Amino acid sequence: MEKWPIGVFTSVDAGLGVKLEVAHDLGVPTIQIHAPHQATRTQASADAFLKRIGSYNIQLTAVFGGFEGESYADIPTVLRTVGLVPPETRVARTQEMKEIADFAKLLGCKVVALHIGFVPHDTASPLYKQILDVARDVCDHCAKNGQALHLETGQESAEGLLRFIGDVKRNNLFINFDPANMILYGTGEPIAALKKVGKFVRSIHCKDGKWAKNPGQEWGQEVALGEGDVGMENYLRTLKEIGYSGPLTIEREISHEPERQKAEIGKAIKLLTELKVKIG
Image (cartoon, rainbow, N blue to C red; front, side, top):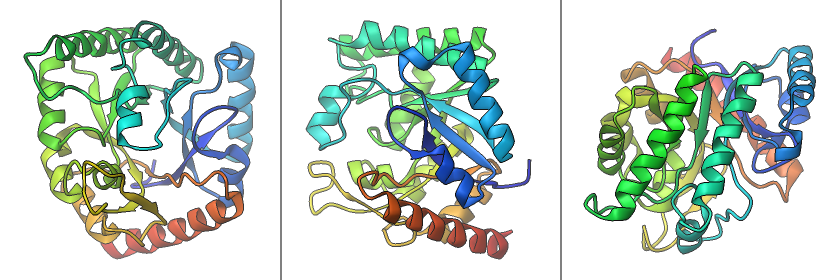
């Protein structure tokens, strides 16, 4: 694979991401995909999907887990509903995450990823220890499939994420770095965070955002790539600095405006292509 192939975050029948046809129309060579509904995580579905992306000449680089009932409406809602942290849904979602990893194996994909949820800051709390056990459980299942598990950034500071990865103690646990999420959640300046966690970064999102007036209390604003506070040239230069050469996966979540979404992703592809030439 070439250095920094451009990609886009996609979906088939569930969750976030643009439809596969949009990725094809835009001519990107790689995709990450949000796992489809449980009923369609079958061998037949996997075969059909692989045939489609094969005909599009697209390579799958990661399968993301997501769950019914998750909402990114605001920070308190994320805290209550997202990932494997909420106790009411933890057992069922942990099992589903393993099933998603098994589906990713059917797709021949060695990377499974998710937002694990808000990891407690108090490392002595029982909840923190429970989340460590959950992360180890999922990592061990992925390891049996020959897969790595990538945690998407956002809910934790760089320091908190490093501490958590260190405490999980599994050699197949890495990071999917999303710079905009650091801004949206108010958890840290993204470029400084990327430098701190760089050795664990194995996949990334290219997404942009603007800081809220009260970061960490109010939700920041997601905007088109290049129009926010990340600084895309600085971001790519830092990716080069940490030795990251994998896909540049664009994520733009405005599914209610599909034409605008496609147009903005198209502009993002143009921007990243120009920056790739500039930075080398």
